[in-house]
Image (cartoon, rainbow over all chains, first blue to last red; front, side, top):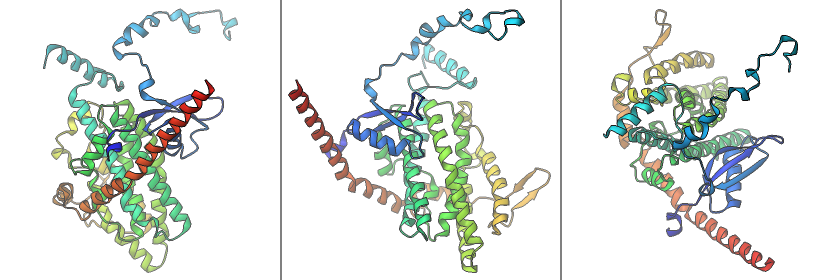
Length: 97
Length: 320
């Protein structure tokens, strides 16, 4: 049993639903290596043709921003409404610009 | 509780009340985390144990088509269990801990799976009623405040719909068949009706954790509300099948705009939860046996991974 006491590493699964779209996070699973993670991901996350391509990434390899930094990271974009096209009121004649 | 924790908790409650979502690394009260771990892992266990009563019929399905359908359904349930275990793991519990809790009888799962599946009609009744009740419970969970649980439930609900429809179709075929087949369908309905109503949990007055779960937006509707919806939805379906729901008190209430129905035998419910249902011991024994007998497969996968890894590092050395 000793080998099964330690859990298999966790893999994050990303799936491209069809050509032309990006890979999107689908969920996670455990597997002993990357190849078997892909095989398991096929069975767990694409039973109904949800994908045409799978990425698996060791969960521990992902570096994430911290929730505590949310404000520092993302608030500065809050008051820059002039980055959006709707900020500019133009004459009706050019309204399709 | 310290002043900071109180502040954090107040902020958390306000945030959740605005219908905002909590993600794994966000601050959350310990009790919220514990409630979710308990609920999500129980839900995962229910999917896994839920494979057993149906697995029983795969080799005896009446046609190749029905066998393929049943296999697909049971495979979905394995998948649902896996989505949910992953969601629970984001809260800090390990897969091994959860499996261990299930195998030692510490963890609970839906009491419905402790009833036996005696005839083929039970495959119809389970899909129609048990999956129907599960969907009724699960759809509101797609909007649960905990992101990973809500996302897992979206996938589960999408897939669950076929489960109910195939079950109804099994019932329909039997109900339109010979007298014996119709009797078989009626017998299955007789045995599954009340346990299905129990799936919604105790009456609201006896459900102590419900209020807190509703405040946290984990739960959206009360047990009795969902149960009433299920009854209202299912009665016309039974009429369509030409089958009789085994409840003499079942009656349309014009004033309420709902069906009235009889009192549930809660003693039976608590008895099954406490481990004394018809199949509790059998289910856990089957689950533990499958896990133990699968040990060599997990070991082989480890050995294979190790060998492949060695091969790769060897060829990398050669290339260098």
